Length: 175
Image 1: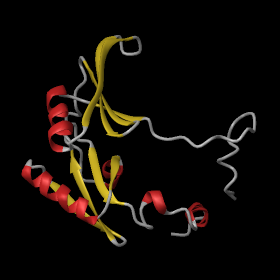
Image 2: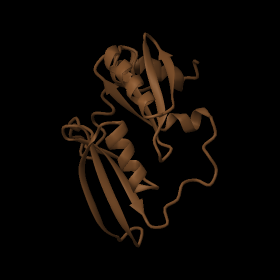
Image 3: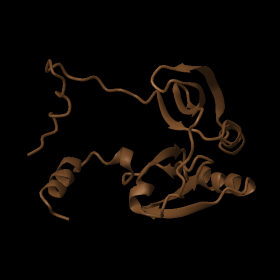
């Protein structure tokens, strides 16, 4: 049986863990130019930083480029010699679609402006309805799926009420 305090007291010392915020999310980039154009020109993000060096882990030179998505939050991309995309395109399956980055927009009007902007840049996107809101899904030049959505009570960031009971039912095999 799960309880809501289990995650808070998950440290070895038993000291409660303080809440954290996302600093950055990192992905591979297969073409620094295409990645930069997409995130600056299409998404409208600001170049937040770039660094190059030799990776002791990979034994190769790397480039790390970051784009600010909000103050103190960034989307980072690693370029590395020999890094290549998968030889076969990702199949259209739930497992590959689960891997995505969801970006929240302010309201429905902002989501509509994104539809216009993506169309102006010839970026294909799909629209899905979840609960009472639309969600846009698109791929960046690295085949990373992005989701643009408005936070609603049904969205992943707003479902704390009843979450533990729902999780427990799933664990217990109630589908």
